[in-house]
Amino acid sequence: MKPSEREEEYVARVEFDRKKKFEEEKHRKLAGDEKNRLKELHYMMCPKCGMELIEIDYKNIKIDKCSECEGIWLDAGELEAVSKLEKTGFDKLLSVFKK
Ligand SMILES: [Zn+2]
Image (cartoon, rainbow, N blue to C red; front, top):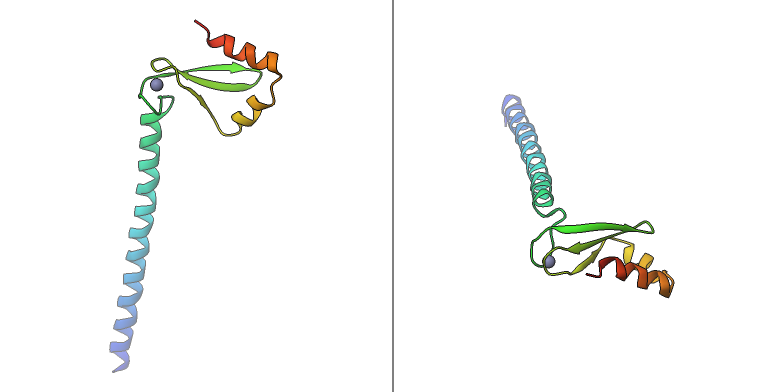
């Protein structure tokens, strides 16, 4: 191989790597956009029936209750927080949702 050919090969490879990185970055960004799109679509919607959730704040525990199927949903760490409530506190929490 002549020195000029070797250089052309090198330039082409660098160009390929640059474009490949650009595409990979684009794909990563796409995945992020898709995540955001899904989050916007599902935020505060019941995971079971898709209707709106009603959020109540009780002793700094935010609990989401479905306005349709009445399922109750907890965020990360909230199950532990609920489990630490006294029995009376737990009963009060449930009474918030009573009809
Ligand atoms: Zn529901």
